[in-house]
Image 1 (tube, rainbow over the protein chains, first blue to last red):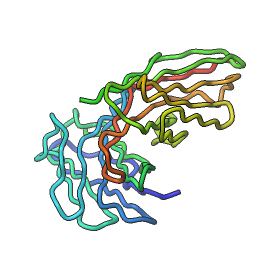
Image 2 (image 1 turned 90 degrees about the horizontal axis):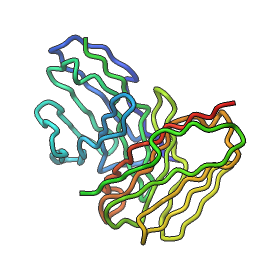
Image 3 (image 1 turned 135 degrees about the horizontal axis):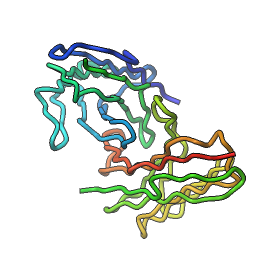
Image 4 (image 1 turned 30 degrees about the vertical axis):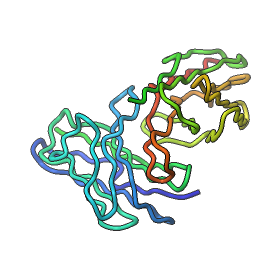
Length: 113
Length: 114
């Protein structure tokens, strides 16, 4: 099946700094990618839809100025957590779809100290 | 707003026993997905159900979809310890393909005891 690669797998950063997470579709083109956040023992919550060549669409309650999304090519979407705080610590997962199938990245464990 | 609920949220079962996880959703959708998540890991696709009445089986797991009742079930037969994980159902929100959003259920933590 198709492969979605996410990098880094884990990152620790200091409060107030920014962190960039990359999501790549390795063997197919994805005009749309999705970013999810998962807190411990909870479900995946959709944060935003990343659209190639245009602005991302954010779900209600997600701060677009804090979670910057760039989808500059058909195989790469990036999520930048700006001015990170401890409450942003979470597991972030990207996804891309090919027809009916959905493929997920390995996830990024972000810890803000 | 599409809501997806699973029950139970937590399931402790003995090896060799059978059980069913239920997934209910609030608005019309013809496509439902089941995933497995191990601790600290991303999602592993189990089943893709694309129409009413769809039934798929893989090993000790069987999934079915009733779009009229807005209900999917994941049946576990003769559980083994290796099945211990969190199971999520997810429903398509939209009418397209690659641009559809997946909305996830609350998850069911399955613990299979020896």
